[in-house]
Image 1 (spheres, rainbow, N blue to C red):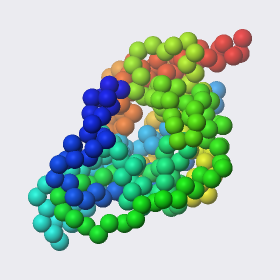
Image 2 (image 1 turned 60 degrees about the horizontal axis):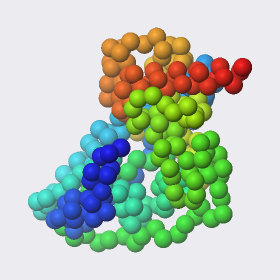
Image 3 (image 1 turned 90 degrees about the vertical axis):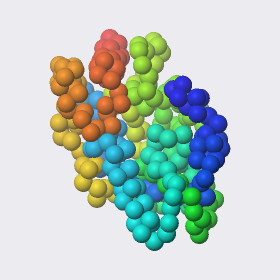
Image 4 (image 1 turned 90 degrees about the horizontal axis):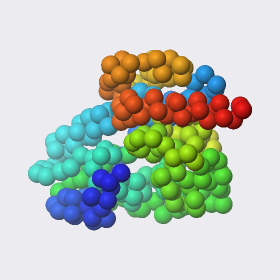
Length: 266
C-alpha cells in the first residue's frame, strides 16, 4: 500500500491534487444485492464484487452528470474520481451531507446504510454548498467492533489495515503470516457492515443492473475455484473488481482458509 504514502500530501490537501478546485460534488450509489452465505463448500466474497467493476460503472455515471452540468454552466477544468485518486472521498462525502463516518470507518447513510460506492466530481466553479453531516448516529453501538474476527477495528473510528480481512485478501501480496486468519473469506469481508443496525434497517436491493450478481462467481465452490486455470480466471474476471486480486493470491486465499479449517477440525 505504498501508493497511499506516496501521495499523502495530496490526500491531506486537495489543492495539491487539483489547484483549481472550487467545488466538490460527492455522490453515493447503492450496490447492495444480498449477503454472503459462507459454508463448508463456499467461502465469502464481498457483496461489492458480485457484479461489474464499480470503478467503470460509477465513473461512467459521473461523466454523464458532468456533461449535463456543462450544458448549464461553463466548466474548463475538472476531475472525476472513483476510489483510485488521492482523494479522501469519505471525508468529502460527509462534508457534502451524504452521511457520517461509522465506527468501522465506512460512510453510513440514512438511505442505504453503508452499502454505497462514493464518487467525487471536482469542479473549477463555485456552487451552492450543502451543510456537513455533523451528527454521529452510531451512538453507543459497538456491533462492528465486537464482530470483527481479527480485531482490525481496534477502537472506534480507527482501523488497522494490516489486520483487516479485506486488505489481506485483496491488497496483500505474497504469503501470509502464521497468525493471519481470513474467517472463511476469499475476497473482501462484509462482517462489520452485516452487523450494523443501520444496514439492517435501511439496506435495499440496488436497482443498478450492473451490480447484479454474476452467478459464475458467487456460485463457485472452493474446489471449483482451486481447479480454475489462470487463463479461465482472467476471462471470468473481465470487467470485475475482483481482478484486483491476482490469480495466485486468490488461490492463496482459498488454500489459507482450507488450511485453517483442517487445523480447527484436528
